[in-house]
Image (cartoon, rainbow, N blue to C red; front, side, top):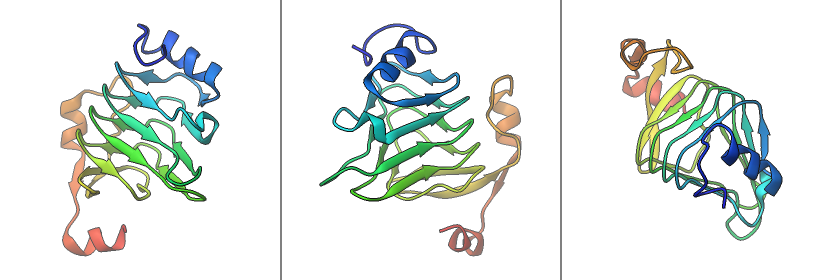
Length: 153
């Protein structure tokens, strides 16, 4: 019911909390977002997080792991975020995941990532938080050169 109900900032987060997902603050959960059914208590979503439509968030592969979306993370549409047994996957504060990306590693804070599997693309200097225009966010991206990409792994 939480996947298809209206209310991206009200009813959906409420229903996911009832299922056991740890939602800490106000969040946006887009249409048809799949959040871990088998181990919902292994998902932690912090204040200001926005999850785009048709994203899948899984905290298990041959057993439960933990998945943490820190404050002000933005997940664009159609992403897959996964972790495996005994692992903790963290998407760092203020990070943005490009549409259609697959997250199989941790994402450092204030990093723009994308691809399959997702890799760091840019450092974020203007977070895509409430009240910030997409144009200002784009202007604040600092591309990572090859050396910086290796340092951020």
